[in-house]
Image 1 (cartoon, one colour):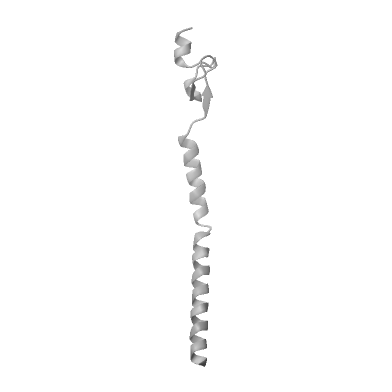
Image 2 (cartoon, helix red, strand yellow):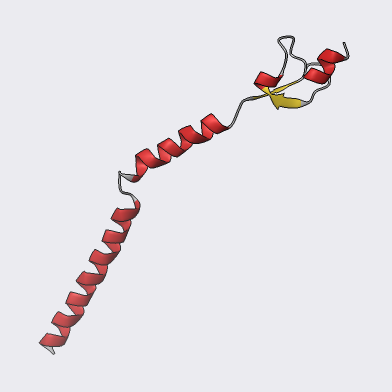
Length: 77
């Protein structure tokens, strides 16, 4: 009976250590710089959007003229 209790206790300790180890791997600090780097890459890929002041079309901000109009509205002026 004592050997059975020791075996059960050993399995329980092994299981708890296994669970704690898996949680520790998920929250490891070495993953943080990678996720921050991914956020920076997303910010570099996407451009801020702006709305044409005349027709209301949303375009990348760099595509608008200095007057705030899109290319089609600038040509029809």
